[in-house]
Length: 244
Ligand SMILES: C[S@@+](CC[C@H](N)C(=O)[O-])C[C@H]1O[C@@H](n2cnc3c(N)ncnc32)[C@H](O)[C@@H]1O
Image 1 (cartoon, protein in one colour):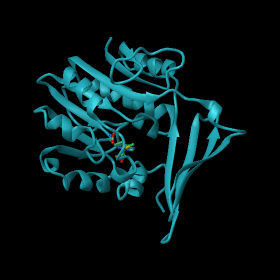
Image 2 (cartoon, helix red, strand yellow):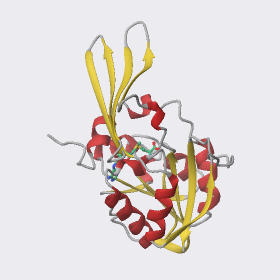
Image 3 (tube, protein in one colour):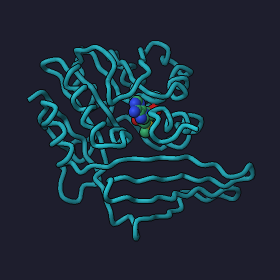
Image 4 (cartoon, protein in one colour):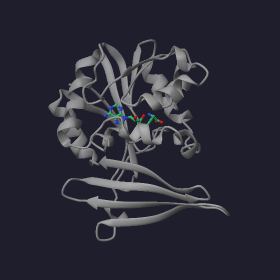
């Protein structure tokens, strides 16, 4: 059976419920931010998924292409209006198996952390640098790790409870590997539904180091897509890298 080491695993297990589960995540601010950087250049989204961000960006006339490991996620993108006109490559975002140059490459919603080793995250930075044009930028959106979430390496949290169902998250934290392995579990009249997630998290300082090793340097860092300041208590960041 496929497992976390298969790049398609997450998408294949989530595709059927992804949009419904994340319906509350409004992409408007991200689209505004990314559109400002894209101009009239070529744009690549790594881990394009069901097109949550790429479709509204393409709707603004921006030339967006995508890469994803999961055919099931891309099929959901294809089923949406405009989804057929976005060119998508099936492959591993650590390898970035496409040809540049791109004005903008972006990786949102913590998707970089879906690469489960430092080596593969480093590969991703290096391969993004390879396809960026001279004036190109790489934008990533990630959370800032909060290890106080875990009590002796584990966490259980109720996410939603209704008359007929309960959804909760069960997570295990491996501090040595900087890895969190979780199941989003739903219990309802049809049974038990398991949605697996594994990530390798990084602090912003490690991301900057990986970027530096790939020949990129940090140009700006914000606390969110609306460019609020990034500071000690920020729960996440939007970071913009350019060729050094
Ligand atoms: C959290 S979803 C984000 C989807 C979309 N970017 C969004 O913001 O809604 C992560 C996406 O990355 C894809 N993915 C995960 N690991 C990948 C890998 N190693 N290479 C390519 N795509 C990958 C998944 O299939 C999924 O579509």
